[in-house]
Amino acid sequence: MRRSPTAHLDRLLAIAGELEQLQLPAPLLVFGSMGKGAARPGDIDVVCDVQGLQDLPLGSLRPLLAACRRHYGWVDAFIRTEGELWVRSDEATCWVRAKNTAGLVASMADAVPLAQVIELYRARVAELSMADCDSGCFGLPDPDEAVSP
Image 1: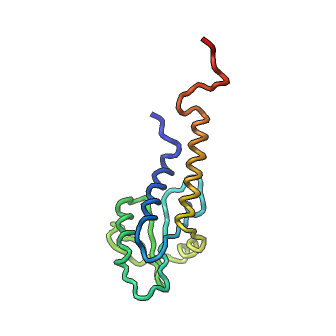
Image 2: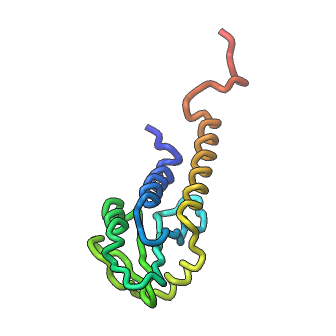
């Protein structure tokens, strides 16, 4: 059976929709390939920038950690606090200090709101679906090539 050309993006959109519903102390921003609008992003790189929120316990970001665990390999989440960058542990059970942060912080400079990314990729999926349909994905005959009985 032929796989939908939008299956990968559909999965990422479903996950992004779930992330959008999380109750977090700051909005999620998307960076990396999906934040740049890549045609086929590999995963969702998000940062929750809580700089300026004084004495915020990392435990308040458990819902994001749980989403990372549920969608392991599909979501890379970071927390930006005053002077620190945190990433999920390998097991996605806790937050650990990120290493080699200069490149990460630089790529986060172009991060965009999650809602904006969802809107972009919903439009892209709709476009791809229409193009796939136009190419005869449903096996319907082309009316221009109809043969009379």
